[in-house]
Amino acid sequence: MAITRRSTILSATLALAAPGGVRARPRGPAGDLVEKHLPHLDRIVVEIMKKTGAPGMAIAVVSQDRVVYLKGFGVRRAGRPEPVDADTVFALASLSKPLATTVVAGVVGDGVVSWDDKIVRYLPDFAMSDPWITQETTLRDMFCHRSGLPDHAGDLLEDIGYGRDEVLRRLRYVKPTGAFRASYAYTNFGFAAAAVAAAKAAGKSWEDLAVERLYRPLGMTSASSRYVDLAARQNRAFGHVRRNGAWVVGEQRQPDAQSPAGGASSSARDMAAWLRLQLARGRFGGREVVKNFALDETHRPQIATGPAISTGAAPTFYGLGWNISYNEHPLAHWSHSGAFALGAATCVNILPARQLGVVALSNASPVGAPEAVCRSFLDLATVGKIERDWLALFGAGFAKMGEPTYGRDADYARSPPGAAPPAAFPEYVGSYADDLYGPISITQDVNRLTVLMGPKNAPYEMHHYAGDVFTFQPPGENAFGPCPMRFMRDGSHKITGLRIDCFDETGQGVFRRER
Image (cartoon, rainbow, N blue to C red; front, top):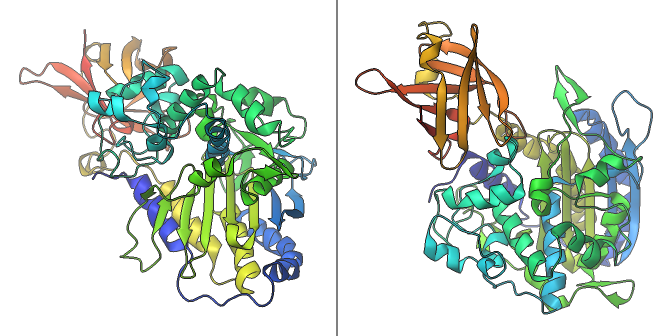
């Protein structure tokens, strides 16, 4: 089974963070420790914000079907006075996933669709690289990331400008890296395909279905699955990135293409309503919103996210839109994080047996702050003390995930810039194509080469590195820095193609020369 670096780091971090080992039983009723330690939550948040510099956070805690804590900290935008409060709307990033499967659980409970319906039943043009897998892939397979697609398949297509329909169409060109139904790899667009199929079965767009089946019934008036709604909110948190040691507002992530997997937005107040629904098994305010049998299925383990034998920690699993782990009681723990490198970090943690849930939202790129807040408070609320430095654990995991995944091979590293001159620029000019990433063009303007890519032929200036190697700065969420572009030649020294490192993590970044 091939697992990418991002999957490996994430699985290892989750395994280390999973509840495990000998834990003291709570003293008195389950709610006593929650009430006792709620006053400490302010201090936890303030300390973690001080250590990370995160501009703003909002926290909600639900216990025994009551919202017992709801508060904002910091500011919506660095350098501006507007404060974060309980109604400030944040981009949720991948915290959208358990929201999405709650929506789908609604239509499953209505009898409109089944978790085990085939995607092609509702999206007849959907295809994977293997015809048999195309016909067999179900909503369940995609919602628990066991399709065999490589980690984050399709994300780079979104980065270079392809919309949802075209990214989903191009999944047929993605070569699998794992065994169907026997391997786990986190895929936003596989997840989105299942959600779009469920919406199609209901005769709705995904965005409208989310409103009708979840946001409106729970009174989540700030929640949306459209970026335009987030952008229009007056009380909105702006995404921040860290530059030169300071948090600044940068490019704002517009994740509509992967909306079910990463495009929702909401406030802490509205997320508290959703927490109540989860803890009450589909009921809210005394009425049934989602059938309990359908919602319960989202919380059941579907696939292991990686063995934890080497770490000594408890194993972890993925359900339908949820990370799931257990300690020795067993005490189930449902969680999920959301992270945009362009400026969002979110987290939810639920202990259903204790009827306790916590959500933390922040407007900074991921450094482990929301996760550390959630886990520190869960420690206090269950065993009466914070058992480890959660910020150090999660911060280290996110730091590794933020390291470049391209331009790391020995040949590139050994060649200092300018070690060899390029060929005459006209040799590189022409059209190149890749089945997955589509056509690109290289043009020359006097002494400059430009690569045009994506559906809008967006231009990116090329910079000579050494010999036939150039670099360009890729766009979007997954861009770490300059990406090497390596021209390839045949025996007669004619350029036959081009390998772009940032597209080649799974070996599909070679563009053949067309002319």
